[in-house]
Each structure stands twice: as structure tokens, then as C-alpha cells.
Length: 207
Image 1: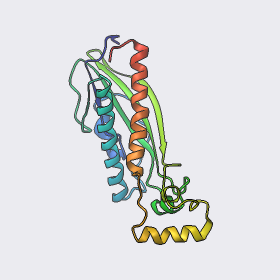
Image 2: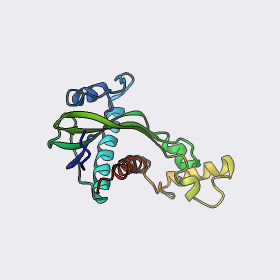
Image 3: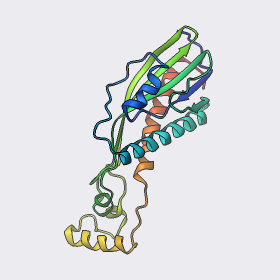
Image 4: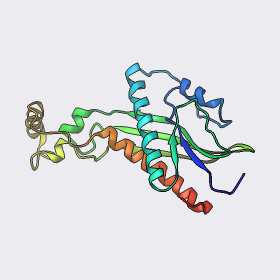
């Protein structure tokens, strides 16, 4: 394996189904986790794939911003170059949570969650080899909701305050100030970027 800095880095939207895994399994000889397409509705798949795309784009943008030239490629498209670092992976858990519970009660209720397993592969003229394997976990746990951003004491005010807040929500009086999906994408991307930057530093590669 070459010790020189990769000429490019590519990221793929992480797999959300068995068919997604098969798109890339013929490109790299790496051990993908078992993944079945069971119990996934069309809506769940669409949410997961949009989340995967958003993470891919954000990781590429954040790494590029740190001086590591990175591109987000669609699954099934092979990378080009004779010394390329490839980020690929799968979702192990993705849940939208319960938005109404999160907005009215806050404090972690109805939390959304995104967990991934990530493989970093180095592809050279000598072949492809997995060099890092790690997991990420992000949840909306204590992300501000209406129970926190609403009237003072509402979050701790019991059923009456929650009911009152529910009326305000219905009337549009309280806004959901933070997108949980965007929040989780950001947290996941940050974790992935940090792992790659740490690896670059350990290798003494310039970024």
C-alpha cells in the first residue's frame, strides 16, 4: 500500500437497502454488513436515501473545506485515479422519531436517530484495501423543541402546559426552530470528517 497522499477522495451515499449494497459490492472487494430490505416502506426508503445523499454531499463539502479534495459519487459509479481514498458505508439505524412529541414535550422525547457503519478504502494500482472501519451515531436527543423554546416553564408545566402549547402549535404560535433531519446529517457528517482528518494526521498526509 502506498504511503503517499491520495490524489482524490470520493464519497458514496451510504447504502440503505440490500440492492444499494450490490451496486458497489462489485467495485470493491470489501466485507459489507448483512443488510436486508425487509420492513422498509417506500416512504422510509425515500427518507433514508435523501438522508444518505445529504450526508454524502456534506462530507464532501466539509472535507474539501479542510483542504482534502473530495467528490460525492452516485453508487455504482467507479472512482478514477491510481491512488484514491473511498468512503462507503451503510445505515444500521435510521428513524424520524415522533415530531409532535419532540415539539410539544422536548427534552429528548420522540428523538430521531441515524447510525452508520463506515468503511474507508484506499484504491491504488495494487488493488483496493480497507484501511479504516468505524461507526457513527447521532440522535436529536436534547435538540431544542417547542417545549424548550416556548413559554417559560412550559417544558416542566405538566399536562396543562403541554395542552396549552399544543393549541399554540396548532395556531402557528410556536415554530419548530431546528430541523432534526438537518441536525442529524450535520452530526453524522462531522463524525465522519473527523475520522478521516485524524487518519490523514496519523499518516502525515498534507491536507
